[in-house]
Amino acid sequence: MKNTFGNSISLTLFGESHGAYIGAVLDGLTPGISINEDFIRSQLDKRRPVGKIGTARHEADEFQIVSGAFEGKTTGTPLTILIPNNAQHSKDYSATRSLARPGHADYTAYAKYHGYEDYRGGGHFSGRVTAALVAAGAILISALREKGIVIGTHIRSCAGIADGEFGDIKADIKKLNELDFAVLDNEKGEAMKKAIEAAAVEGDSVGGVLETAVLGVSAGVGEPWFDTVEGVLSHALFSVPAVKGVEFGDAFSMVNGKGSDYNDNFYISEKEIKTTTNHNGGINGGITNGMPIVFRCAVKPTPSIFKAQDTVDFMKKENYILELKGRHDPAVIHRARVVVDSVTALALADLLALRYGTDYLASLS
View 1 (tube, rainbow, N blue to C red):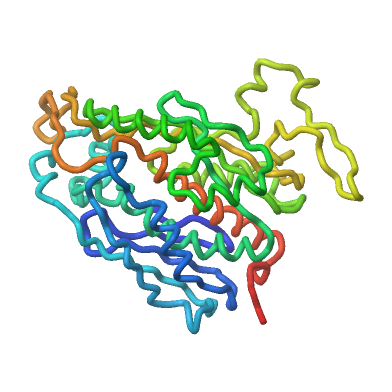
View 2 (cartoon, rainbow, N blue to C red; view 1 turned 135 degrees about the vertical axis):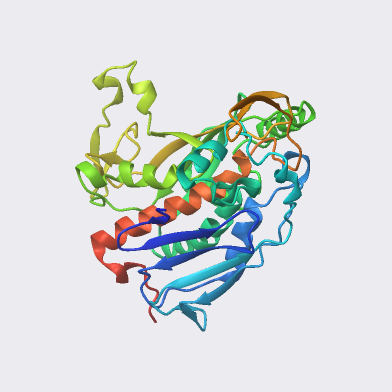
């Protein structure tokens, strides 16, 4: 299995949805990075399900940092985070062992691991594992913030309901990072919640689009060709289980326009080079140009629904009609946004360490 991302700073994920623990190992961190456990907890809280718009499975996420940290700072050795699983209902999955749940990885996991995989709750493919991503990402988000780099994501749309657009990005990021349901327009946010609740009543689910902005990354980060900023970020973003598409800047609307519409003209402001627009999302030739990095992620509707669905028993090679039991989210987009922030921090931290050296993120005193 390939469960490691990153070159200079790397993250390895381990564990299964219904196993004893999930966890992450961050390697390549310079010594001296501050670890704020309260901030890690607050980030995990944003991933936790809430009320009628989330699953009934509630985990405390009482993480433990068991290596790589001493007296509130990284030591430079591998940093390991453990998060116990305490709220498993494994019996919910025994009856569907050999049934391919539509939209899930049950069949592909069986095809790859020959039936030896832990299938309960999606096993290693479960969104539960993203808790470890968020805990590790919180350390990197804090380190980047110390360097003046901030990340913020909002629910650009959900169930066909559109949020407002980024305006004052710095202020918007600050606001979003204080919210559990990350929207710029509170009224639109309430409408989205009602739509999610309505889908739940129907035994169905909804998806949407997350939009992320990053401020503070200087020009010159990234590589041409195979390690472009878009390529590295997309690699990380597609690790988020529900993400099925990524768009940088105004990529998909550009195809219906002209170069004169979407080229970002340059100008000088107080000896800084900027662009009048940001249709390219702060990236030219795979390298940052100093403008805000902006991208969007398509988040699919939660595949676990309570409607009858056609499927197969992949062991018996028989057709089957599936009616799911258990605890499932009618939408994951509001929980996925902190995961997107976390993998964004991981990808950027790695790119920055490759550009400026691993000591770049240190808060040495």
